[in-house]
Image 1 (tube, rainbow, N blue to C red):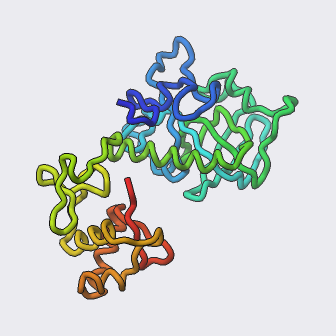
Image 2: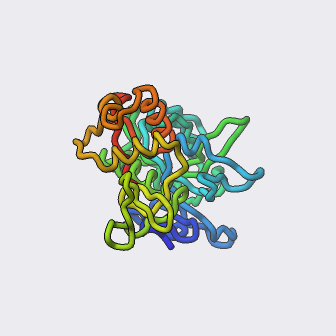
Image 3: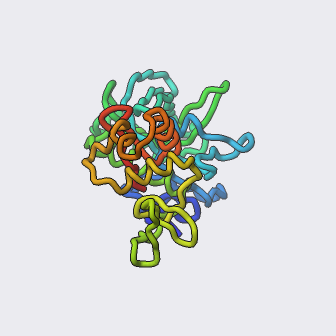
Length: 285
């Protein structure tokens, strides 16, 4: 099941094809013939995900959310450009972290990089837009490390032609992260169609608790956190959510207990802060 995000057999865009996840043809990493790399993946990520990726053993593909990420793509602002005789090194910052990106001038020197596609990222004499300092760029490449320092061996580095690409990419990275950590989206469950609403406003089906409008079971939480969650889920409110003091008044609970419950829900990723740290709203998922 691809869950609607273009994932098939842990491969974003169907194992390197150009049709999945909104990628244009020619922008993905296709395995070179005869190399035996049929299980290629292309994954949209944030820089923090790239820096936090794990490697089960030397020479293995890096993994993010326990899934192979042999080739990654991300979008960020170019903070530095360093040109050498053999390569160009960029520092890319997407707001979650900063990472070095190394693009070889001689494609044959770049490990596991496809020659033709590497040439696509070279602007020399082609008339294409160039990568500019403090501009935004999209990077396709492989995670590597040297001397315990993580970097990306780039196959393609191209400037953004529309800033909306940045926003779309971050949404894609979030959607794929949720796919691997929480599973594909399921059908919505509504009261009166197989679900029952309990006295406290909790949705139950077969004894389980479910997040707002979703069949994903809620994590274990304290009784006070559950009461706060149910109030946030069912109380009429604006997009700003409810302030901690108002929640305490409505539940007739001490503000300190409500504050601890809010921290618990924030840590579990069930609510998020809005106008200030003490105003919370339900995170729909």
